[in-house]
Image (cartoon, rainbow, N blue to C red; front, top):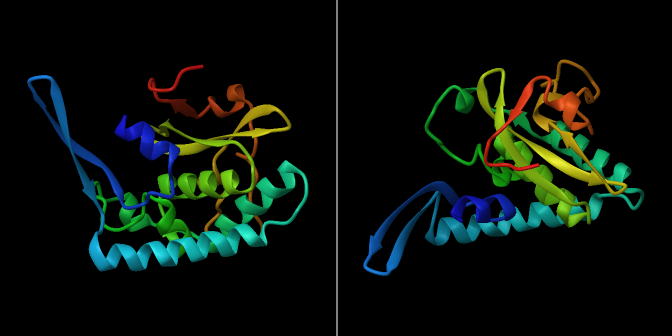
Length: 191
């Protein structure tokens, strides 16, 4: 339930994936872990909400695909892949969440995917977080509903890290068959 909540609410960037629980007679207690709290969290929420509002207001009116492409390109142009965090198993900062991608300007795949999901949903585009493996590593990407059909998109793999002056679109709105050539969806996701 905690993981499902976090996956449906990328705006709750301070909630860690780690939690503990214990059963008491007929009740279950859950202890949540946070990346920050107190004044630091209050300040971070303000920064995050300002960034999300500013970006959302810049999304042009147009078709779902045009809005989706704008959001995709915005993230690619304003976020760098955090190589150091990717090589470390411990979450250090906000590399796995939308805050990392939209405020800090650096994230790993989960941060890219959560930022994309949040901005698409703000732009009235149905978008969900997907996770599994790619190249035998844990990986996160998105499912997005465009024109009534669901597609898969991997904003992280489309980010060329500045090697080109344009966004690669090799992983933009792929069918399940095409995406599953090198991405394997976690068993947690159904058809």
